Image (cartoon, rainbow, N blue to C red; front, side, top):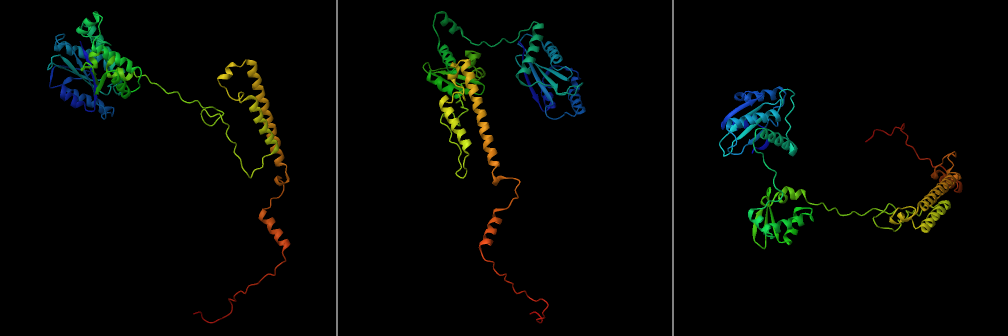
Amino acid sequence: MATIKLARSTSCSRCINYAEPRATVKSGFNCDVNYAKTQMKATRMIYGKDDKVQAHTLIQSFKPGEVTPEQANALGYQLAEKVADGHQVAIYTHTDKDHIHNHLVINSVNMDTGLKFQAHGQKAIQEVKDMNDQICLEHGLTIPEEPAKVRYTTAEKSLLEKGKSSWKDEIREAVDYSVSRTSDFKSFSALLNKNGVDVKLRGKTITYTHLNANKKVRASKLGSEYEKETIFNGFERHIEPTETRDLTTDRSGNNEPRPAATDSSFDRDPELQRSDAATEKLGESQSGEQFTRDSASDDYSPEQLQQQLNQLRDHTKQLQRDSSKAVKRIFETPENDLERPFRAKSDRNREDSERNEPEQPTVKRDQPDYNQDNGPSL
């Protein structure tokens, strides 16, 4: 059963320095494994990409007793061909653990294109796992099984056969109930506690405690449905309904008409006032139903809706005519005749004052005689 771990490093030399001394068998794909560091660095320097991520590491582990070191290294070479075509890869096989495993050091820069190796995110990891599974199946090796959504021990199975449930089943029921009614871990934990189960989050693991039975169990023992990733992905997002804004009002749910802006220094034209009165009268007669669409409008027949639409069009045309008349009359007044010469108000006031007051004699001030010799200045 071969498993895969994928990572990246900013130092290719450090990865090789770790893997090479411990290797029982080693080989190179697109490079001489004895000069892997030098050749990989040369490729990165040629394309000017010797900074940031320099290498990707891939660990390929096998089930104890399934393969020999030589077979494992050959399988690692095949994986390098599938995963990193065009890249330099050094394959080192380690036997210092109970299970034989390979360390594949992949140069980040492609020899032919100069592009960097892309292996980011869960999608890329899954693609590498699928390639590895294909190689293992071709050679008659086992592959990891998908984790069971619900895992039962032998004791639990025995209870189920007798029609009984265990304390673990009670935890599962409480978790299923709580996760479907909460949207975050805090509320999930609080609801779960009310149902007799305590939950602790430690890194990537979750531990459940049955409060009445005073027993603990890790989520992985209950099944993949109760692990951290599944719980966080399964929170139902309950979105509170937002208030709908009525287009005829300034605030949601407020049906009171807005007060019109008024100016005490502005005398409204009678034509416009009549138009406003007509608008108010029409609004009262129709209760505003022709201007807004609400649930009651669904009960109207097409003929009634068409009639209201025609009334709205006629009313709009009348408003436009009244406004045009008022504006035209304002500009036709003598005070607003644009062809008349403009005279400032201050000039007119000055003419009136000069016309009503007697003419005052002009006072001549004595001017100094700069030609007169008054002697030297002190």
